[in-house]
Length: 259
Ligand SMILES: [Zn+2]
Image 1 (tube, rainbow, N blue to C red):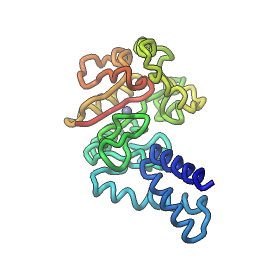
Image 2 (cartoon, helix red, strand yellow):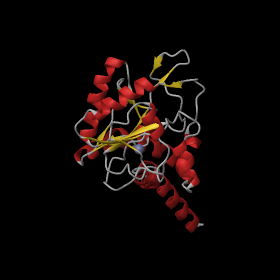
Image 3 (cartoon, rainbow, N blue to C red):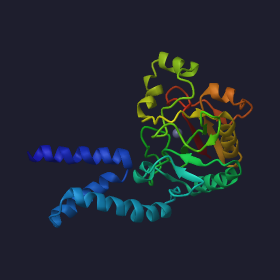
Image 4 (tube, protein in one colour):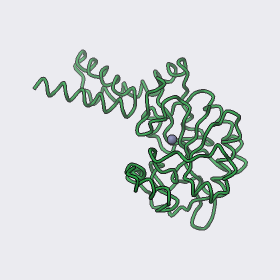
């Protein structure tokens, strides 16, 4: 029985660490506190988790070189509260500044930057799964722009998670990658949690968003699916690249990274 308990704790630790980086440590502290003060874990865990999320991790991460992206800012915000809650919205200060400045410029166009997965608070080389490259504070995923079925500009998004609603259901690169055996290439379709909003992809404002991101001198690369680069008339931009078949489809979001 004791062994099963230990294995159970280990699995919880690994799961929380993979999902949130610091959640596993919070679980260990929870076990200690609930044992010492005879309190239930289901009460202790959420309390300690929130204290870490809001008060303890942000200043330590800042001291060690990463900042939390804004959560309640109307110009730059997460797709939903899960991203900050799971410690998945940390970046280097340079990327934070770049995004804030870009978001300020984009207010002229009524465009809000909606971010998805960024990086964890600590440790270069620690990947934010399933994105292997989001491991140094320099990477971020950003939502496309959409319009209503009447053609009006909106900052709403069709996917609850931010991932998995593709501009075209099929595209040549995705078919090619899947045929080559990269079966993970379109697995994000299982993560969308689609809301029935009838929103359509907005090429013009997505292009504006992309070009504003690339204006910064320290912008390095931006990934979108090759057919979209073509469709948006962005072929002249060498910073916009194909991410390769080992990644996932990028016709549901933008991946952006700095030098
Ligand atoms: Zn990415």
